[in-house]
Image (cartoon, rainbow, N blue to C red; front, side, top):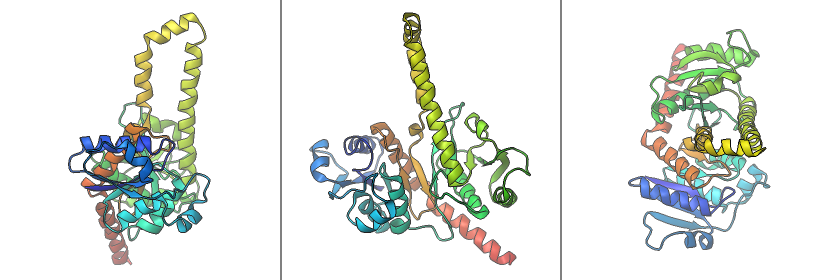
Length: 336
């Protein structure tokens, strides 16, 4: 298996990207990685005798300040663009980047391309739940608006990923809404509900935001606007909670002693809430696996994102989505 990785994307590039790639090479059999970025910065981080890693040199990078679409079109030699080109030209099976999210989505659309029949791709992280199993949330920002049939495609893609990669038999799919009753929501959500009942998935109805961390569904579907707000709210709540805990434990000698006693338990809780354990956010609906690692990814998070991309390739997620969508389109034609 061959992966292309944007070595210059993320807050800790290229150091943590390269370290994560080395971990992956050592732990995943048959993996070959192409690192795309400044060879003068990457090479010193690699052991002299390392195998199965090569470098495509470029000094051009798309930063967080760049306007994504314009940058992708103008910076033809940017690391994220050349990474995607490796996938498009079949020299790599999948790609991973911790860089500019908008640039990756634009590159995915313009360079890698969509699966035929997919109206819009969806950005899809796996988030933690109380039971430790996690759930898939999509879309979290690839598209601000969504029509009812887009939400159905998100549900199908999410269900396939949950089953093929996460190993969940008949994954439950819920529609994010302001109430669990069938008649809740705006016109788009109500229409989507009716369509989801007929879709080839295990649809369990509406779910509320307060219940998603409790494992209300294996896959939670929403538009990119609501999904991004939900994601940022969860991130902010977790950060605030641990900040408040730290302040409380450091407030007196008594609480400092208590903190020392429960230090390992708190570390375990923090790891349980760390969604980088599940890898990155998949950009579903493209003609090859594209993984967006978190911008602050360390070597462990990079390794998990690489492992996620490998699982998507191994389990033919893209081909399964393509076949399922083609089947639905044929059924529509027959019904017409």
